[in-house]
Amino acid sequence: MHDPDAQGQAKFRCDFCGQAWTDERPMVEGHRGSLICANCLSVAYAELVLHNAGADLPADETVTCRLCLERRDEPHWAGLVNTDALACTRCVRQSSGVLHNDDDIAWSKPVV
Image (cartoon, rainbow, N blue to C red; front, side, top):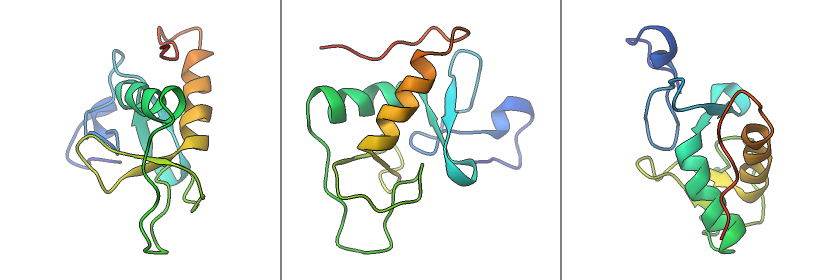
């Protein structure tokens, strides 16, 4: 999400927790400027991938993954602060691969 009142990197905030983008808090961008930070991604990955947990989408047909804007029939993770922001399993896997494979970022996929 974008914070029009902030300056520099702080203009960009995680859609799931609201924290500002910093060098210590890298983020992955989804469609239309949506963002998920490394901290939220760690929690989402652990829940969806390692523990096969997560929630089904609500019956409301307009609810979609915040990152891909698609409605997928798979478990989703709800944000830590913004619980209306959902991330599908596919996007969590893809986003974790992006951060994990980036040599400039010291982030690894969580393990059991």
